[in-house]
Image 1 (cartoon, rainbow, N blue to C red):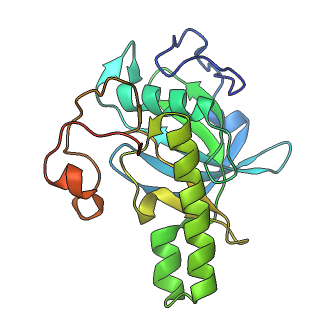
Image 2 (cartoon, rainbow, N blue to C red):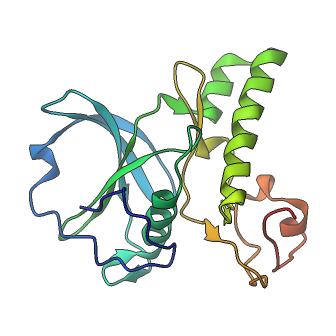
Amino acid sequence: MLSTESNSSIDGSWSEIEEYSEPLESDFERIGKLGGGTYGDVFCVRHRLTGEMFALKQIRDENEVNGIPATAMREAAILKQLNHQNIIKLYDVFLTDERCYFLLEYMDEDLKRYLDRNRPLDRQMIKNFMYQLFDAIFYCHKHRIIHRDIKPHNILVNHEHQLKLCDFGLGRAFSVPLKSYTHEIVTLWYRAPEVLLGSPSYGTPG
């Protein structure tokens, strides 16, 4: 398991991760599937002892480093650095012989599904959501992190109308001088103008 209390750097060692030998089923009861994407499926699970609800993200195999998917390494390393009320909380990382799992804070649904059910939003709710989203993005940029995949599917909502930014698999630590990044990121319709036009150099404002 990987403790989220660590403050190692974004590019730090993964020596803290130990193989999780006991079956996840011994601790968590799977309730149902919450969704899925390019890099994995997400399930709602309940801790058998405490009854607390979590989201369990099962990472799909892709480019691996020492048996760990590269996107999973980046996402977990970034989430370990971030502590904000509008960014999803990572509790643990579990490794088995065949899979990598993230144990995440549970949220009710993504913003895409919420908007499909609640259109049109009133002006006050729009302002509330935008404030929370901008606050999360500002916090990331202040800590020199660029998300690179902000879209409604990667913004979660709970029943108290609290937003949380999630899915940092394409995120990067921003540095000076500027690094060159691929512009083939983010779903096409949500790309920033400079990315859409093919710029290989981009970062946080200012």
